[in-house]
Length: 276
Image (cartoon, rainbow, N blue to C red):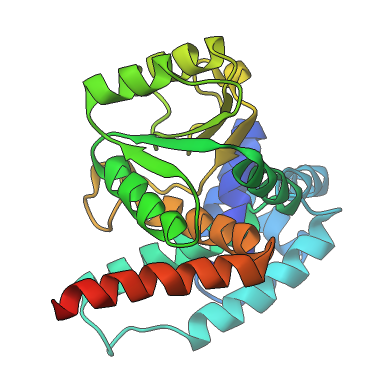
């Protein structure tokens, strides 16, 4: 598992110079608690104190001393919680990926944005959830969960049905489009069609600069690790399901009594059908 400081380093590397990236690589690869003073590290890496300070600021810290304090604390916890010897290397890899994804997911939550999307869910007469492939599984899970508490929601995973649904959208319609890569042409085409009809658009993606992002009312970014969309190690829909759970909590908290009643009614209908 990578703790917050190492995740901060990875996020900050896009704005670093080559020299600062050299410092970043050192702290990412390091697993030992040592003398992290600027004097010692500058001597080890042949860098100046000013470079260390700029590196720390790229990571979101006021200065190098603040970074080192947080990094040392995280490193002690990381070493204390080391799973070596308890699990196989395969299990450790999955464990690490899940914990990194979970940590990054909650660090990136924008509560104000979640509240606004919940308001869109509450005010829309009809909700469509578009998704292809693994995102389609999330769309169906979204429909199942939210329909149980009274929402008029339909998961659309077929390409022709998706285009027809987008063309029939109205101003009172909410479209939730899901694409982890943010580049799925079918999803982007349907966003354009639904937007032309005046529908509200929420785009859930890990791509912070997807095509046509300006057409969305909310661009909801989810956490991402290498090859997540390919499902090589862990299920690619995990990070999306996390934000769906949070949205569910927000939506359910609005008029909880009525939604609890609707949930019990749908549950009763399901149970009654099983007894026949």
